[in-house]
Length: 311
View 1 (tube, rainbow, N blue to C red):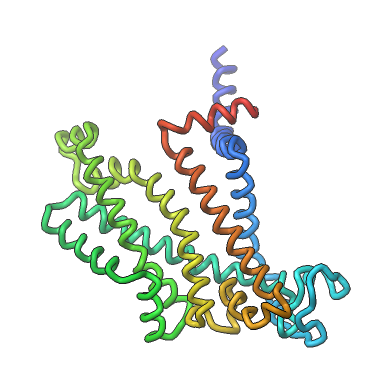
View 2: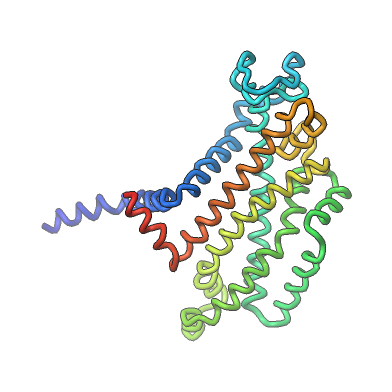
Protein backbone atom coordinates (compact mmCIF):
# COMPACT_ATOMS: atom_id res chain seq x y z
CA UNK A 1 0.00 0.00 0.00
CA UNK A 2 2.86 2.33 0.84
CA UNK A 3 4.60 1.62 -2.43
CA UNK A 4 1.44 2.42 -4.38
CA UNK A 5 0.91 5.74 -2.59
CA UNK A 6 4.55 6.72 -3.13
CA UNK A 7 4.22 5.93 -6.81
CA UNK A 8 1.11 8.10 -7.08
CA UNK A 9 2.87 11.02 -5.38
CA UNK A 10 5.87 10.65 -7.67
CA UNK A 11 3.59 10.72 -10.69
CA UNK A 12 1.64 13.74 -9.42
CA UNK A 13 4.60 15.95 -8.50
CA UNK A 14 5.93 16.50 -12.07
CA UNK A 15 2.40 17.40 -13.17
CA UNK A 16 2.05 20.34 -10.78
CA UNK A 17 3.63 22.97 -13.08
CA UNK A 18 1.41 21.75 -15.93
CA UNK A 19 -1.71 22.02 -13.79
CA UNK A 20 -0.66 25.56 -12.85
CA UNK A 21 -0.28 26.46 -16.53
CA UNK A 22 -3.63 24.86 -17.29
CA UNK A 23 -5.18 26.89 -14.49
CA UNK A 24 -3.87 30.14 -15.98
CA UNK A 25 -5.11 29.15 -19.45
CA UNK A 26 -8.50 28.21 -17.97
CA UNK A 27 -8.70 31.58 -16.20
CA UNK A 28 -7.81 33.29 -19.46
CA UNK A 29 -10.47 31.29 -21.27
CA UNK A 30 -13.01 32.47 -18.69
CA UNK A 31 -12.44 35.98 -20.06
CA UNK A 32 -12.70 35.53 -23.82
CA UNK A 33 -11.48 39.03 -24.68
CA UNK A 34 -8.37 38.58 -22.51
CA UNK A 35 -7.75 35.18 -24.11
CA UNK A 36 -7.87 36.65 -27.63
CA UNK A 37 -5.65 39.54 -26.49
CA UNK A 38 -3.10 37.12 -25.03
CA UNK A 39 -3.03 35.10 -28.27
CA UNK A 40 -2.54 38.26 -30.33
CA UNK A 41 0.30 39.45 -28.08
CA UNK A 42 1.91 36.01 -28.31
CA UNK A 43 1.86 36.31 -32.10
CA UNK A 44 3.42 39.79 -31.88
CA UNK A 45 6.17 38.51 -29.57
CA UNK A 46 6.92 35.62 -31.93
CA UNK A 47 7.09 38.05 -34.86
CA UNK A 48 9.43 40.32 -32.88
CA UNK A 49 11.73 37.43 -31.96
CA UNK A 50 11.82 35.40 -35.17
CA UNK A 51 10.62 37.87 -37.85
CA UNK A 52 13.95 39.62 -38.55
CA UNK A 53 15.73 36.25 -38.76
CA UNK A 54 13.69 35.22 -41.81
CA UNK A 55 12.29 38.42 -43.34
CA UNK A 56 15.04 41.04 -42.86
CA UNK A 57 16.26 40.85 -46.46
CA UNK A 58 12.76 40.81 -47.90
CA UNK A 59 11.75 43.83 -45.82
CA UNK A 60 14.76 45.82 -47.06
CA UNK A 61 14.80 44.76 -50.73
CA UNK A 62 13.40 47.44 -53.05
CA UNK A 63 11.27 46.72 -56.13
CA UNK A 64 10.19 49.86 -57.94
CA UNK A 65 7.73 47.88 -60.05
CA UNK A 66 5.77 47.23 -56.86
CA UNK A 67 5.92 50.86 -55.72
CA UNK A 68 2.79 51.68 -53.69
CA UNK A 69 1.26 48.36 -54.72
CA UNK A 70 -2.35 48.14 -53.48
CA UNK A 71 -3.30 45.55 -50.85
CA UNK A 72 -5.02 42.19 -51.40
CA UNK A 73 -3.31 41.56 -54.74
CA UNK A 74 -1.28 38.36 -54.50
CA UNK A 75 0.37 38.41 -57.94
CA UNK A 76 3.68 39.49 -56.35
CA UNK A 77 3.52 36.97 -53.49
CA UNK A 78 1.86 36.47 -50.13
CA UNK A 79 3.86 39.18 -48.32
CA UNK A 80 2.36 41.81 -50.63
CA UNK A 81 -1.12 41.01 -49.30
CA UNK A 82 -1.06 44.33 -47.38
CA UNK A 83 0.49 46.16 -50.33
CA UNK A 84 3.91 47.66 -51.01
CA UNK A 85 5.52 50.86 -49.74
CA UNK A 86 7.00 53.79 -51.67
CA UNK A 87 10.08 51.73 -52.60
CA UNK A 88 8.20 48.55 -53.45
CA UNK A 89 8.97 46.70 -50.21
CA UNK A 90 6.23 44.37 -48.87
CA UNK A 91 4.35 46.00 -46.01
CA UNK A 92 3.57 42.73 -44.21
CA UNK A 93 7.25 41.79 -44.02
CA UNK A 94 8.18 45.28 -42.84
CA UNK A 95 5.50 45.29 -40.14
CA UNK A 96 6.73 41.92 -38.84
CA UNK A 97 10.36 43.08 -38.81
CA UNK A 98 9.46 46.45 -37.26
CA UNK A 99 7.77 44.64 -34.36
CA UNK A 100 11.20 43.82 -32.91
CA UNK A 101 12.37 47.44 -32.53
CA UNK A 102 8.94 48.57 -31.33
CA UNK A 103 8.73 45.86 -28.68
CA UNK A 104 12.42 46.24 -27.75
CA UNK A 105 12.08 49.95 -27.01
CA UNK A 106 8.83 49.53 -25.08
CA UNK A 107 10.02 46.50 -23.08
CA UNK A 108 13.40 48.06 -22.30
CA UNK A 109 11.87 51.31 -21.09
CA UNK A 110 9.21 49.57 -18.97
CA UNK A 111 11.63 47.10 -17.35
CA UNK A 112 14.23 49.79 -16.60
CA UNK A 113 11.70 52.24 -15.18
CA UNK A 114 9.98 49.54 -13.11
CA UNK A 115 13.25 48.30 -11.58
CA UNK A 116 14.61 51.77 -10.80
CA UNK A 117 11.28 53.25 -9.72
CA UNK A 118 10.36 50.25 -7.55
CA UNK A 119 13.79 50.22 -5.86
CA UNK A 120 13.55 53.93 -5.06
CA UNK A 121 9.95 53.47 -3.90
CA UNK A 122 10.96 50.66 -1.53
CA UNK A 123 13.69 52.86 -0.07
CA UNK A 124 11.39 55.88 0.22
CA UNK A 125 8.60 53.87 1.85
CA UNK A 126 10.63 51.83 4.31
CA UNK A 127 13.48 54.11 5.39
CA UNK A 128 13.35 57.32 7.38
CA UNK A 129 11.27 60.35 6.61
CA UNK A 130 14.05 62.58 5.26
CA UNK A 131 15.32 60.01 2.75
CA UNK A 132 11.78 59.35 1.57
CA UNK A 133 11.02 63.05 1.17
CA UNK A 134 14.23 63.62 -0.82
CA UNK A 135 13.37 60.77 -3.20
CA UNK A 136 9.81 62.02 -3.62
CA UNK A 137 11.06 65.50 -4.51
CA UNK A 138 13.13 63.88 -7.27
CA UNK A 139 9.96 62.26 -8.60
CA UNK A 140 8.17 65.63 -8.45
CA UNK A 141 10.94 67.24 -10.51
CA UNK A 142 10.63 64.59 -13.21
CA UNK A 143 6.83 64.81 -13.23
CA UNK A 144 6.91 68.61 -13.51
CA UNK A 145 7.94 68.21 -17.16
CA UNK A 146 5.45 66.73 -19.65
CA UNK A 147 6.90 63.32 -20.50
CA UNK A 148 6.61 63.66 -24.28
CA UNK A 149 8.03 67.20 -24.24
CA UNK A 150 10.97 66.07 -22.10
CA UNK A 151 11.63 63.20 -24.53
CA UNK A 152 11.52 65.60 -27.49
CA UNK A 153 14.02 67.99 -25.86
CA UNK A 154 16.47 65.28 -24.81
CA UNK A 155 16.33 63.40 -28.11
CA UNK A 156 16.78 66.66 -29.99
CA UNK A 157 20.02 67.23 -28.07
CA UNK A 158 21.17 63.60 -28.30
CA UNK A 159 21.39 61.41 -31.36
CA UNK A 160 18.14 59.48 -31.86
CA UNK A 161 18.99 55.81 -31.27
CA UNK A 162 17.38 52.82 -29.60
CA UNK A 163 19.53 53.19 -26.47
CA UNK A 164 18.78 56.91 -26.07
CA UNK A 165 15.10 56.34 -26.75
CA UNK A 166 14.90 53.63 -24.08
CA UNK A 167 16.80 55.85 -21.62
CA UNK A 168 14.56 58.87 -22.12
CA UNK A 169 11.29 56.95 -21.98
CA UNK A 170 12.47 55.05 -18.88
CA UNK A 171 13.32 58.27 -17.05
CA UNK A 172 9.90 59.77 -17.78
CA UNK A 173 8.12 56.68 -16.39
CA UNK A 174 10.14 56.23 -13.17
CA UNK A 175 7.82 58.42 -11.00
CA UNK A 176 4.82 56.18 -11.77
CA UNK A 177 6.45 53.14 -10.15
CA UNK A 178 8.17 55.19 -7.45
CA UNK A 179 5.00 56.79 -6.12
CA UNK A 180 2.95 53.59 -6.40
CA UNK A 181 5.58 51.47 -4.64
CA UNK A 182 6.04 54.00 -1.83
CA UNK A 183 2.29 54.20 -1.19
CA UNK A 184 2.01 50.40 -1.15
CA UNK A 185 5.01 49.99 1.17
CA UNK A 186 3.65 52.55 3.66
CA UNK A 187 0.44 50.51 3.88
CA UNK A 188 1.96 46.99 3.88
CA UNK A 189 4.61 47.75 6.51
CA UNK A 190 1.84 48.30 9.07
CA UNK A 191 0.39 44.82 8.62
CA UNK A 192 0.74 42.20 11.33
CA UNK A 193 3.04 39.82 9.43
CA UNK A 194 5.57 42.60 8.82
CA UNK A 195 5.42 43.70 12.44
CA UNK A 196 5.91 40.08 13.52
CA UNK A 197 9.00 39.79 11.30
CA UNK A 198 10.42 42.96 12.87
CA UNK A 199 9.81 41.63 16.40
CA UNK A 200 11.52 38.34 15.50
CA UNK A 201 14.63 40.27 14.48
CA UNK A 202 14.50 39.85 10.70
CA UNK A 203 16.84 42.11 8.76
CA UNK A 204 15.51 45.05 6.75
CA UNK A 205 16.64 43.38 3.52
CA UNK A 206 14.67 40.23 4.34
CA UNK A 207 11.58 42.16 5.39
CA UNK A 208 11.55 44.26 2.23
CA UNK A 209 12.27 41.51 -0.32
CA UNK A 210 10.71 38.52 1.46
CA UNK A 211 7.57 40.03 3.00
CA UNK A 212 6.76 43.38 1.37
CA UNK A 213 7.82 43.06 -2.28
CA UNK A 214 5.78 39.88 -3.02
CA UNK A 215 2.64 41.66 -1.79
CA UNK A 216 3.06 44.74 -4.00
CA UNK A 217 4.49 42.94 -7.05
CA UNK A 218 1.07 42.12 -8.60
CA UNK A 219 0.18 45.81 -8.55
CA UNK A 220 3.48 46.72 -10.21
CA UNK A 221 2.99 44.08 -12.92
CA UNK A 222 -0.49 45.39 -13.68
CA UNK A 223 0.84 48.94 -13.98
CA UNK A 224 3.70 47.70 -16.17
CA UNK A 225 1.23 46.11 -18.59
CA UNK A 226 -0.64 49.38 -18.95
CA UNK A 227 2.60 51.34 -19.11
CA UNK A 228 3.87 49.11 -21.92
CA UNK A 229 1.03 50.36 -24.10
CA UNK A 230 1.73 53.99 -23.16
CA UNK A 231 5.46 53.69 -23.88
CA UNK A 232 4.79 52.03 -27.21
CA UNK A 233 2.49 54.91 -28.18
CA UNK A 234 5.12 57.42 -27.00
CA UNK A 235 7.79 55.72 -29.13
CA UNK A 236 5.44 55.75 -32.11
CA UNK A 237 4.75 59.46 -31.55
CA UNK A 238 8.47 60.29 -31.39
CA UNK A 239 9.18 58.25 -34.51
CA UNK A 240 6.24 59.98 -36.22
CA UNK A 241 7.81 63.35 -35.34
CA UNK A 242 11.12 62.23 -36.84
CA UNK A 243 13.20 62.14 -33.63
CA UNK A 244 12.76 58.47 -32.82
CA UNK A 245 14.26 55.48 -34.61
CA UNK A 246 15.94 56.53 -37.87
CA UNK A 247 16.16 54.61 -41.18
CA UNK A 248 17.34 52.02 -42.12
CA UNK A 249 15.92 50.80 -38.76
CA UNK A 250 12.15 50.66 -38.75
CA UNK A 251 9.36 50.81 -36.20
CA UNK A 252 5.61 50.96 -36.59
CA UNK A 253 5.62 54.66 -35.73
CA UNK A 254 8.27 55.39 -38.35
CA UNK A 255 6.24 53.48 -40.95
CA UNK A 256 3.20 55.64 -40.15
CA UNK A 257 5.37 58.75 -40.51
CA UNK A 258 6.75 57.60 -43.85
CA UNK A 259 3.24 56.89 -45.16
CA UNK A 260 1.85 60.24 -44.06
CA UNK A 261 2.59 61.98 -47.39
CA UNK A 262 0.76 59.23 -49.32
CA UNK A 263 -2.50 59.30 -47.33
CA UNK A 264 -4.55 60.51 -50.29
CA UNK A 265 -2.99 58.20 -52.90
CA UNK A 266 -1.82 55.14 -50.90
CA UNK A 267 -3.63 55.08 -47.56
CA UNK A 268 -2.44 51.55 -46.75
CA UNK A 269 1.15 52.72 -46.13
CA UNK A 270 0.10 54.36 -42.86
CA UNK A 271 -3.06 52.37 -42.13
CA UNK A 272 -1.60 48.89 -41.53
CA UNK A 273 1.23 49.86 -39.14
CA UNK A 274 -1.22 52.19 -37.38
CA UNK A 275 -3.65 49.30 -37.04
CA UNK A 276 -0.87 47.15 -35.55
CA UNK A 277 -0.26 49.85 -32.93
CA UNK A 278 -3.96 50.12 -32.10
CA UNK A 279 -4.52 46.35 -31.80
CA UNK A 280 -1.40 45.84 -29.67
CA UNK A 281 -2.34 48.69 -27.34
CA UNK A 282 -5.92 47.42 -27.05
CA UNK A 283 -4.69 43.89 -26.31
CA UNK A 284 -2.38 45.16 -23.58
CA UNK A 285 -5.23 47.08 -21.96
CA UNK A 286 -7.51 44.04 -22.05
CA UNK A 287 -4.79 41.80 -20.59
CA UNK A 288 -4.11 44.37 -17.90
CA UNK A 289 -7.78 44.31 -16.86
CA UNK A 290 -7.61 40.52 -16.62
CA UNK A 291 -4.37 40.63 -14.61
CA UNK A 292 -5.92 43.09 -12.16
CA UNK A 293 -8.47 40.41 -11.27
CA UNK A 294 -6.27 37.32 -11.65
CA UNK A 295 -3.52 38.66 -9.37
CA UNK A 296 -5.94 39.81 -6.68
CA UNK A 297 -6.75 36.93 -4.26
CA UNK A 298 -10.02 38.58 -3.23
CA UNK A 299 -11.35 38.80 -6.81
CA UNK A 300 -9.70 35.79 -8.47
CA UNK A 301 -12.70 33.59 -7.64
CA UNK A 302 -14.65 35.22 -10.48
CA UNK A 303 -12.27 33.80 -13.07
CA UNK A 304 -11.91 30.49 -11.22
CA UNK A 305 -15.69 29.98 -11.24
CA UNK A 306 -15.76 30.72 -14.95
CA UNK A 307 -12.87 28.32 -15.54
CA UNK A 308 -14.70 25.53 -13.66
CA UNK A 309 -17.85 26.09 -15.70
CA UNK A 310 -15.89 25.94 -18.95
CA UNK A 311 -14.01 22.88 -17.68
